[in-house]
Image 1: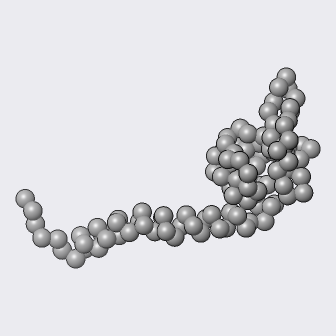
Image 2: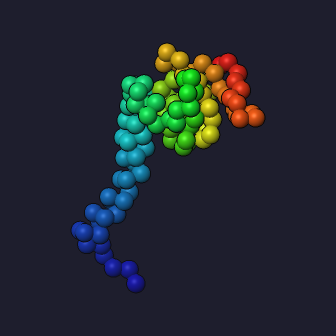
Image 3: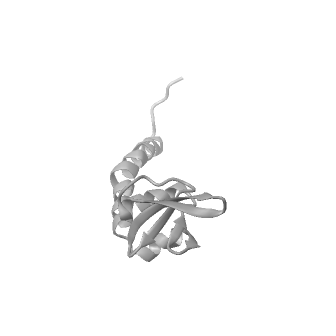
Length: 104
């Protein structure tokens, strides 16, 4: 049975319709700009330090932040990256308990 919408129902419908638009056109671009221009220490706090400039990407969101801030490849969970002087210089993997690497 259809009934006419009252003003409260119309506001709820408009609010729920606006949320995806706000996410795509406001939140996502702002987050991208902030991550691109965030200070390097802020990025390094999101990564897990392993020593000698090596860091492990603990979650995919930190990998996205790393990609936006330092450019280059798309980083995913469990990737190892060496950061020297604010630049990603090598990608690594653990083999026999040691970090093996390849220059970027």
